[in-house]
Image 1 (cartoon, rainbow, N blue to C red):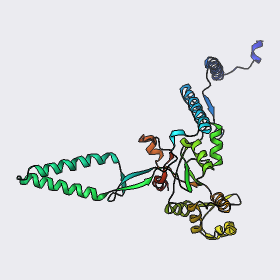
Image 2: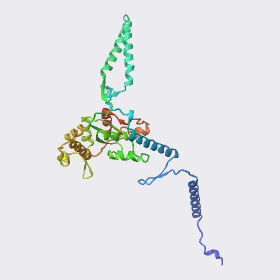
Image 3: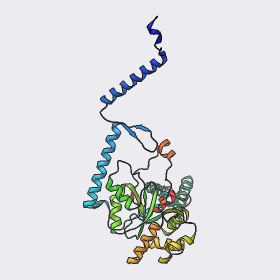
Image 4: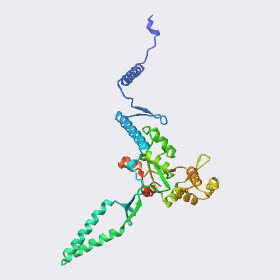
Length: 329
């Protein structure tokens, strides 16, 4: 009798799978020994593994160091010459027909063509063709000048009582902890969220510390009213409740003399006033209002597919902030 008859035969496919598994484990062990930098990042929410290049890790560490250096410099020495202590007034050109702002770079060319047309019209008075062309050009220039209007505006927030700040950059793992702490104290924790802040010396210093991450400026009364009516939510018992009824305002802020939306808009626009009671009322109103969740000025399709970048738009925008808020409403 053959003694091997009692042994069970292992299928060839099972042996092949076992061999492939042993090879795969050996390859992973060898790669873990040769790899100097761990490029795997596992997110707890989605439970996915992302492979990050070593160059990306170096760039992120450089950004973290630069942000920490800037924070320490501003906290010790202030903004120095990067921020003016006086109100700066600039002019913008507005096209009344298109209802949009025009670049000032186009203005010198128009003035040059106007001067050239005037010289052409004064030079040859005998030729009818030149006169007709010069008169037509003059009429076009006059029409363009009637469409364009120069409007002065404040380019910074000096002298304002209230500012509206929006978080425009994400606070990720490369953001220094002091910056995250300052943003959380300003109640800016999510992208494209905005809050009303009293513009005093303490708030101004905090905004300077986190200036690359925020966009802030002076809101007008119309902008404040639109924000409260269209994107207004309040905090009731720790919950986010839509601001759809004056009864909620009267129930929560009736002791402070605020009973309707108009009272809220007036209190935010004036900044509460100079007294301690008014400042306490303004802080109570700002805590009552939930941070306004706005939409990005440029969509993800525009940023990624069309490669439209936001540029270096951050910091104090003054009265020009009203235009940016209306784009994000």
